[in-house]
Image (cartoon, rainbow, N blue to C red; front, side, top):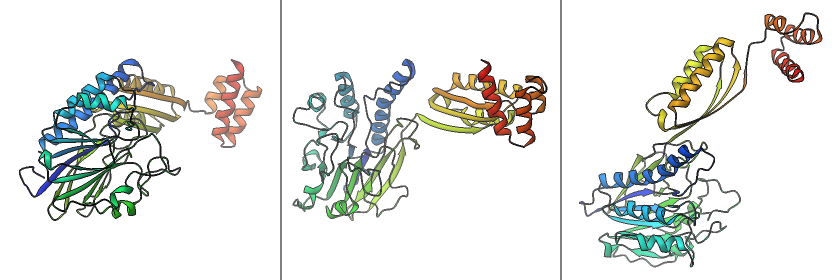
Length: 377
């Protein structure tokens, strides 16, 4: 995958960068840091591509999150891409689709350096005039949603057999890989992709899917996923692909971790202070400052353990990038001593909760106590 080897074509692939996401659910400092994180993720991709001396840097759709991105963001994106030492090819996706009156892409082209190619039309792009023995077959999006794809033209297109490498770039769902039950996202099938008879496919749209999961020289479909997670639904770490294809059309692939932000959803059952310690340990550490955590805790903790939990969460809130907690299901243990302490002996609340406890139905006893306490307020 070295550009000095004339028989190998090396590509760095990213997609779904979503510059301009607003992250409006977060408070100002976290929001601004997450917005900035999209740009620094793109910078890390360019740096990683330069480190590997890649020939081509591809953004397979959704460089931007929407059509109405600020001019400063567009100019900054163009400047980051211009720092790549080779050719950059950018495909409009369904979030940043290309239309005849697209102000977004006009501004981008005006801000772009000579090494940046905008693949705004469904056509082949001959890269030989840019020093690369390759052609890119582009399938850009022209709207937000569509029940058909934009790769159909490729199978019937003629091939210039004097060009060494033929590579498809498309944005949309792929049957069996990314969910699209309602067929709204330019759906493609493996058969359609195979029928295009290309050496390699560079795909975007499935922002949570880093595909394939295993490195196999026979794979020709590659989807990088987003280089930076965008929310708690995102389980991967933020990755890209470094790819090389030789004159015999064998592919060598390297998965490249480029993400910095981590989202962690934790459902914790706590029974004592040791569980609290384990919960804190799972989130503390070197990556804490880049971690957004959402904790739902449940279980019976005595007063001492509940105090420990509050102190632990206070420390985590200072260490983590962002913390959300739900402690509604954390309750004090309900035993006869607690009932005797809270209710007068032989009163209705005392008899009810005692009878439920004696029937070994602790959950019902706690529910009864909760209702009684709520009625007293």
